Length: 463
Ligand code: PLP
Image 1 (cartoon, protein in one colour):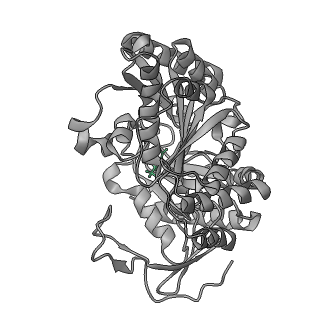
Image 2 (image 1 turned 45 degrees about the vertical axis):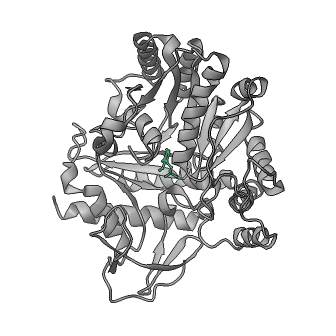
């Protein structure tokens, strides 16, 4: 690890004067450089980045190979092309890389510039899939889950079950979205219920929702295999994805997975569904796809869905100016080649297991740590007032935000991703750890011990 030079400044050095951002009142450390797992501030501090933004920078910062791939593409003189007029070999190579990465379970790629746009496209594609087959189709609604986050554009937010983010915009959000409960073993387990019984209960709930709405009216079921920011790394229970897909297919609806945050290696397999061998009909990916080197996301489309388009009009009634840009593709292609060639998913699994093990060892008995859960390099800690009752803290206290601030200040100098129980009272405050796939055992040791020190220090002051 690079050596700290020390700084006279406390956390929070500058407020933005011009940028309209999520929190204009807050002061942030100003970052001037990045290298590997580290961010360098204007006032001389070195911060260990364990969140990689929001689980984005999967190769860490400043990877020269990706920078050079972007430079090579720029030198061709082609950074942008309208995909409706021209083909491009870099873009095609990326799509091939992505399809191969699904073990050819998926057939086509629709490129977008962000995860929200990918969700918008998935919503429209799934509707058009039925419309292509029958223009009078009665399939008009979606079933998604409570406590989910699928993006901030109106369609993606309309699918989401994130109460706080939906609240200001409720009058314009899609009305034909229905939510079932999430898959949260910690919060929803009944008594000594086994995982099998839990999964059976979830499948029965989804089945009942189809029956209530009329199975012939449902386009699809949308879920994140591992819930990211909304609930704090809540993984599916083994068997869940298989059981939910079975219900969808029983009623001819599409099984749609949002892997924008948990996908592209984050969970320890390239796609989270691969661990269960349950391929979706449509899947969104983002974040780790371009590793933060370019804004890029995508929808992966199964043969079943694609066939309807190839047999029919061949046209997806959609499209945006900035999609499938060669410059985005060059970055993502290089990131994906590195992930594959360096077998980084194996490192994610190995280091992720070690991170989980250390966190449980260091914080498993802490009176305010209710749950420690995760998969791969995607771990969440949920904080509670009382471990027996699982009562969360009042979101107004901002426990997670305060823990984040403490972690970011000296001497800890580490990022932690906070989430306050605003997803609808479905979880308490939580923090996430999602470091780059290049982390070593020593990095994990440091991350786990720093996290434990921060959590212990925070709660030792009393609330
Ligand atoms: N879906 C999930 C699961 C996400 O976590 C996010 C972003 O955090 C999105 C969709 C939206 O992606 P973006 O912020 O790139 O629009």
